[in-house]
Amino acid sequence: MDADGKTSRERYRSQVCAEIKRHAWEQLATTGVSALSLNAIAKHVGMSGPALYRYFPSRDDLITDLIRDAYRSLADVVGAAGPGGVAAVAHAIRVWALADPQRYLFVYGTPIPGYRAPEDTTRISNEIMAVLIDVHAALPGDGPATPFEAHLDDHRDWAGGQPVPSAVLRRAVTFWTRLHGVLSLELAGHFAGMGFDPAVLFEAELDTLLPGRLRCDQADDSRDQTDDTRVQADDSRRTLPAGVSSV
Amino acid sequence: MDADGKTSRERYRSQVCAEIKRHAWEQLATTGVSALSLNAIAKHVGMSGPALYRYFPSRDDLITDLIRDAYRSLADVVGAAGPGGVAAVAHAIRVWALADPQRYLFVYGTPIPGYRAPEDTTRISNEIMAVLIDVHAALPGDGPATPFEAHLDDHRDWAGGQPVPSAVLRRAVTFWTRLHGVLSLELAGHFAGMGFDPAVLFEAELDTLLPGRLRCDQADDSRDQTDDTRVQADDSRRTLPAGVSSV
DNA sequence: TTGCGATAGTTAGAAGCTATAACCGCGACA
DNA sequence: TGTCGCGGTTATAGCTTCTAACTATCGCAA
Image (cartoon, rainbow over the protein chains, first blue to last red):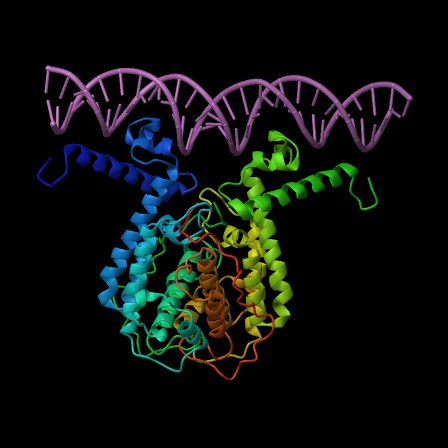
């Protein structure tokens, strides 16, 4: 038993665990999750073969752990950007996604067929949603209730019981779906052929989510002092190798 | 050589090819693409093992073919719905996606790392985009130019050379990203916890794409005679098994 | 009709993967 | 000091994709 309340064995174990996951992320970022091989990881870590099973009972358990970490990381980033408001959160999500496209698609991409998300990750997911709700609750209210809000008023046992206005809920969900729509297509390389910069499109969609402007066809010239958290549209932005898809 | 200009061997070959793909789609819809096994398909078709390699040089070639077919199918559906206008196209895409979630995510989900889309599929993809542009060109124009449109005016060697107004291009792309945002999250099961019906959210986003209403916070009560191609929000709608993701 | 050649199928096997089983050695702790 | 458990090993089963070698059969032409 050491000073920090952990035995030396426990410290060693968590250290090896971390190194395994480090190599796993490395492999994940380059080859994608379908090619994630325990053998290859073991070889890189230095031990051979089935030794990994002392640390992760199965490949799916390792993947579950990685997903949990990815969620945790995103939740931290979103939480940290929360005080900056809606635009700051949006840009934080974008930089997080571009930093490791496979990680984003790992969480929000095509689900693994037999995989069941543990209670843990859905809790983190709710945590992220809570921040989205918070930043949108801080926005000034607007127009009449939409049909979707009426639907939300009817069907919603969600949001932990606290009474979130359906308008706020609607804006938070819309924030999520619109940014994910642009981001996921960008990361999957579907904008490859058509010359525009996805960053500008992202900015355009974010614009529609800011106070008073949630549609798509109106320009707003009164707000051009965009905050400096905007992701610069450099040409070296990272996407996946163009093509089409699955895994 | 037979009446239709194909030898009997060619007819047999394409027939076996079709049956292989039939079983492949069956397996794909249930187990997802990561678990798509040539051996299992061969067993179902009735021949054993490496015989499939007479028809598809590798697993990736089979997958490429399936992706091409999926694209082709979507392009046909979108093309057929084109005359019905924007809403009809949106609903056609939605029913196509819900009919086989894995097929949609196969095309628009997480890309396969080493996979390179052949020229073929990008052509079909452009064909789909052309329909989107057409239906949006038929819509009445609107407000002042957005920053994204200005960007499109600068960077666009695309669209086959014919001068599509940047406003139309912007609306078509926005149509794509917004509907994909809702659809992909729905199919991946990310709305599972929160009580609302994704169909209503889809309808809400579609609303923002119709003439004069491309933002998100305004309700429109003047247009409640929605067309009958609307996808009914039944409770038996198909999503993937809840959880989180990758493959 | 006879025969040749391409085609479609077979089994065997290499290399890789996940995962289990059996075994061993060292470190921690009573 | 003895013992127990943890972390590592090798061997192996069963799956995968994919190649090699071999065989039978079908179509076409002489």
